[in-house]
Image (cartoon, rainbow, N blue to C red; front, side, top):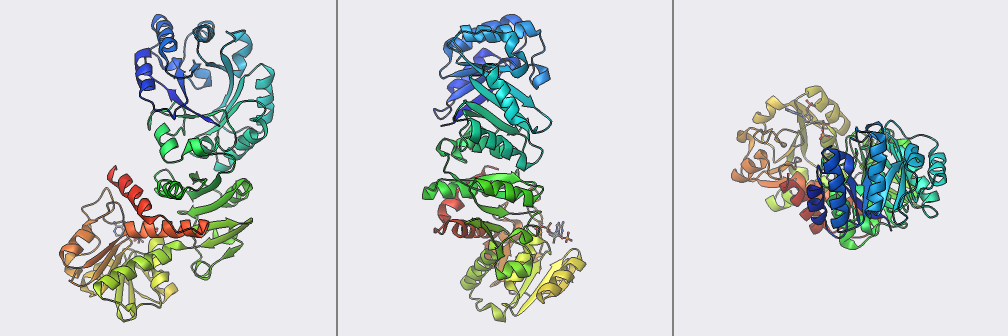
Length: 498
Ligand code: ATR
C-alpha cells in the first residue's frame, strides 16, 4: 500500500517537530526538507539531530540543492555530509539526487537511499532508462519527479509505476496542476509513497495536494489496484466543486472509486489514454462540452440536438454521452412551479436571462414545454441566435422590466460571488406567485433570490440544479441511487467555508 508522506518545509527543527506532532496517523511518513531550514551550518546540524532524535514517525531527510529545485546554496561537500549524518542519526531514508549518489558513498546500513531524478521542464521519454539507472546505482527506492505539460503526461509516469513498482520500491509523480492526478493515483499503481503538503500553498513542489484533502476528499489510503476512475474534464479546473461532491458520494455508498480533476487541453488524447486505466465516467465542463460530442460512440437524442454534453459514461469500452444539466434544471424548475401552483408549464411565460452555456441547456429543456419562452441577454445577438435555435423570442436586458413572466430564470453571472450586491432583475419584475430560479449557486441565496422571496415568489436555487445534475451523473455511471443528502451536505460545507 502506498504511504502518504507530508513534505515539511519548516524553517527550524522546533517548527518541524511541532508540525509533525500535529499530523494524524494516516500520514505514514514525513519528509524533512533541510534546505528550508534557516541556513546556518551550526543550527542546521543541531536541528537535524533534534529532529532525528524526537521524530514520531519515519522520516526522509532531503537537502535539495538549487540546481534540483531546492533551496540549499552551500557547498556540495557539506550538503552530502548532512545526509550521511542524517543516516547516522537514524533517519529512515535520505533522498539523494541521481547525479550525487556516487559522491555520497556509503551511509549507515539502517537507512534507505531514495535516489531521485527531477525534471522541471517536461516529462522525458526515457523514464524507464532513468529508473534503471537509479536502480543500478543502488537505489533502495527509485524516485522520478517530472513536469506534466499536459494531463496525458501523467500516463507514462503511472505506467512506469505499474511496470516497475512491484519489483523495486518506486516513487513516480508528475508535477504541476496537469500532473495532480498522478499524486492521487500513485496509490492505484503501486507507488512506494506519494507526497502531500501540510496545507494549501505550503508544499515543496507544484501540484502537491494538502494531506487532509488527499485523505478526506480522495480517500488516498483506500485506493488500490482495482479502484475505478472518474473525473471532471475542464480547463480551468482548480476551483471545481465536482471532486468534493462525487468523492463524497462514492464514499457514502462504499464504492471503490476515485474522482479527479483533469485539466485537459485535448480531450481526444485524454480519453484514449485514460480509457486504458479503468476510466468509467466523466463530468465535462467549459470549454469541452461541444468538443466531446464527436468523440462519443453514442449520445442521447437531446445531446445530439444540442451538440453539447456534460456527462460521459464508459461501459465495456464504449463511450456514452448525455446531458444531465438539462434534466436537472427542468426538475428544479418544475418542482418550484408545482409548489407555486404554476403547473402545467404549457400555459406559462418564462423569461430566461442569459444566452451562454447554462441558458442553452435550460432553453433546450424548456423549448416546446412552455407557453412562451423569452430569452433576454446583454448581447442581444446571442439571445437571438439561441432563440432561433429553440424557437423562442429574444430581447435585450433593458426590456426585462416591461415583461410580466410567470417564471424568471437567471443564467447570467450577475450576483455571483464576489459581486453579491448585484442583481439581474429589477425588483419591479418580481410579483407574488412567480417562480424565480437563479442558476448562480455561490452564494446559495443571491440578491435576486432574497428579493424574490421577500416579494412572495417561490424560489429555486442553482444549488439544487448543481446537486441535481451531479446526482444524475452518479446514477448514469453507477446505476445506483445517488446519496443526494450527503452530496448537498458537502457542497454546503464547502460553500460556507469560502
Ligand atoms: P455560462 O456557461 O455559465 O452560461 P457564459 O457562456 O460565459 O457562462 O455566459 C454568461 C452569461 O452571463 C452571458 O449571457 C453573458 O452575457 P453576454 O452574452 O452579453 O456576454 C451574461 N453576463 C455576464 N456578465 C454580465 C453582466 N455584467 N451583465 C449582464 N449579463 C452578463
